[in-house]
Image (tube, rainbow, N blue to C red; front, side):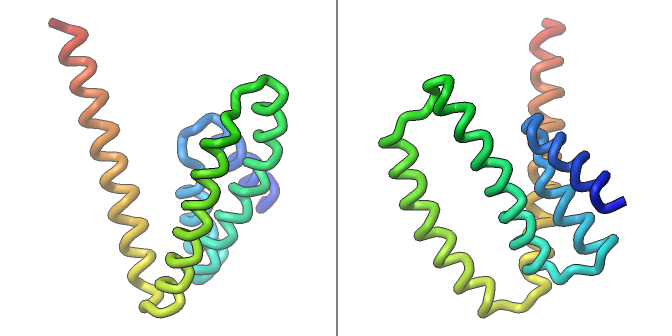
Length: 122
């Protein structure tokens, strides 16, 4: 069952829907992972998927290597700082922060959809 769920989440991630949130929810609620471990597992899952996507984008010449260097450098600094903060705070804070982020993203998505529909009907 875990393989099927992982495959479905990978498909959702590939479509750009945000399967990472689903993976964290699945790992914490269904498999009982701690929040930090679930987020780390999600990160590894995403990195592996991204590595394969990079080859396709390089082949299609869609990558600006200077932008990649800048984003990778800043991302590494952010990941280092974030991991230090995550180790020093209570485990419930990342869970609450993820919940707020997912709810906020959902509200913004619904708002934008309704706004587009309203403008379409004018």
